[in-house]
Image (cartoon, rainbow, N blue to C red):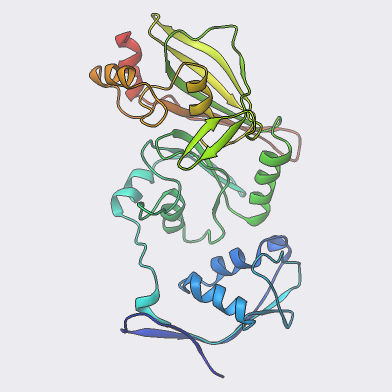
Length: 321
């Protein structure tokens, strides 16, 4: 049988025999391309997409689009492959990141792995990020090949982050976030500039993406954030509790800034003078923390996972700004 080859700049390679994969009920509903990328470890994504476009990688004997939703019992025919090592992205996870995340697990059960993500750590690999939380935990937990992010936190936001161990757990989380947003609770803490008005409890300015930023715009997407006062720091700052009702990009940061009370240390939406004062008192980084996640279970009970306020905030709160 002819082999499909992924070429690089030469070097050693390896061969993989043709095979068939039968889809079980756990993976029903997943996109074909995402399933293949999780099962064909070490095969460059570009080669997977090429095989799909050419109809060389078939489902039940037919060519399918990469967005095809798998069904239980589907049979996927994978042709023989030769992989040039130079064509495979290295993507090594730095040992320092592994060490940083090793002791961060807050909760684990058969469906979920939930951690206290440190500030400054990305949740996944990106243009300027060699590896993030998900890549690190796939290396830490090689026995969990289906591990996926259940939701996301900004790189500079710390706190509760959930990962799903199976496609069914991932689908359940996504259903909660898309269709049952009043049932799943995402609670945050933030230190904001000025004295937050107690009467302002709901922020609902629609949000729109504008290049790398997000702006409040009447024609944007629906967004709702609830806010309560936790502690007043004289009249210069306020520790607030925040609950997300929707999950737009940078939602909390933009809503608080739009209300006139930007978050301490926010280098994109913050107030430069306020940030300078915070830094002079030893306050480093964005002061936004995912404090608590409440996930309704199928049996009617709630899974409640909390992450303590970062210790680096304590000095700032005591300093009185």
